[in-house]
Length: 257
Image 1 (spheres, rainbow, N blue to C red):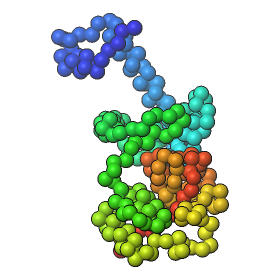
Image 2 (tube, rainbow, N blue to C red; image 1 turned 120 degrees about the vertical axis):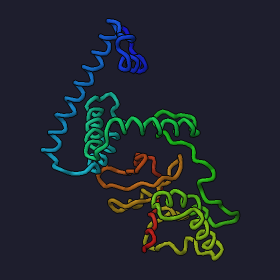
Image 3 (tube, one colour; image 1 turned 90 degrees about the vertical axis):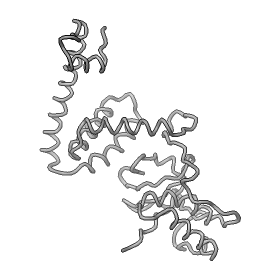
Image 4 (tube, rainbow, N blue to C red; image 1 turned 180 degrees about the vertical axis):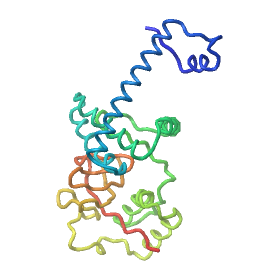
């Protein structure tokens, strides 16, 4: 089968008389166009059905639903209907957000460059692909802290990123002050909460409230996730399987004003 490249098509568009396509290239281009038309027809039919069924709503609903379908696909990766559901939800969310295919392609090109510059751990089948965090992204942890205070230093970088309201210098200063005044200690935790000795709440004892944002502790790092009673742990960048979460702690309320 003849293949045709993007560069070849661009040359033909710029000057079709001097860069005419061979018959094989014409057939390949026709196959590509046909596949694109078939895909657009399905997207159009799905958009009509989605609008008549769910009405004029935003992209958040299908995006939240996507995490559920992704977990189901992970459980049965050979089930093509699960893959179809994920594509439908992505298409629907993208359309409702008003994002074009060209914008998605450009964003993917930019993100690929970022991912290629990151460091990645040794791959393990069945585990999320999480890049190695740069050492400078987390607050400096002084020596000799109590366990709870040390844990606070480890998770505060993740919490600050999620809340989007704390500067690195401000976070560091507050934690240093807490440490010096010996205020970060297990004795100040609410006594009514079942917690592990180091300040984390055990998943086996209690789960967060529905739609509550938390820092979760997993064997591959700390992440900010939102607990959903119907869908499990959900995150902006990655949703973590429930079985991978060891324990959790609630995010603090952002500063007011």
